[in-house]
Image 1 (cartoon, helix red, strand yellow):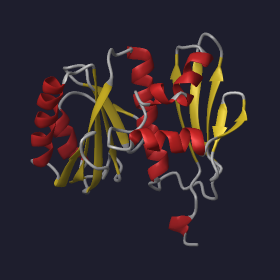
Image 2 (cartoon, rainbow, N blue to C red; image 1 turned 135 degrees about the horizontal axis):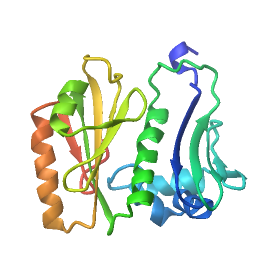
Image 3 (cartoon, rainbow, N blue to C red; image 1 turned 90 degrees about the vertical axis):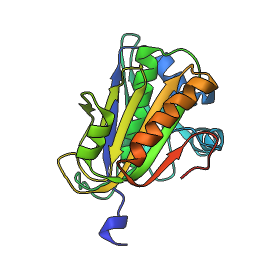
Length: 221
């Protein structure tokens, strides 16, 4: 096994001013998971079923785990909780990119937005992928972002949509690499959603190489 294949340790967490029972439901009940986990594509429901129902094992109250030794836990009380995604791997190379770690970082930001902001209506997402660098992405986004680790950032745009940005390269690098942007909208009808999708697609195509846009009507990348 090469060093690049050695499982990396990580701990990703968010704090929420909410009771533990409500938060635990949000990370275990598929209808609520559908409102924050991942991004829309044709088999998101199947992915949620596979990860959180078929493959998850309940290890303790408010903790579920998977075969690779990773786990998700909710701790706290009625006044506040912390959600943690943890893997105790064989290396502590904190600077190395790990797709699972960065996935949890993005998804827990989406959970935090859902539970704190309480957006109305069903979530519909626009998932943008392509190769570019952080300065180009931040120029596309507009507005001040909040950092979430070395490779992720987020903001709520002027229309109230959550925008989560994740990159293979750290934010202090000007090098080009794969970038992912997930735009979470809530309660939009088809016409309104199409306006938002088209606007983001046009902006992204001008900035990223191999730009792709994924919604529920297109295959997963």
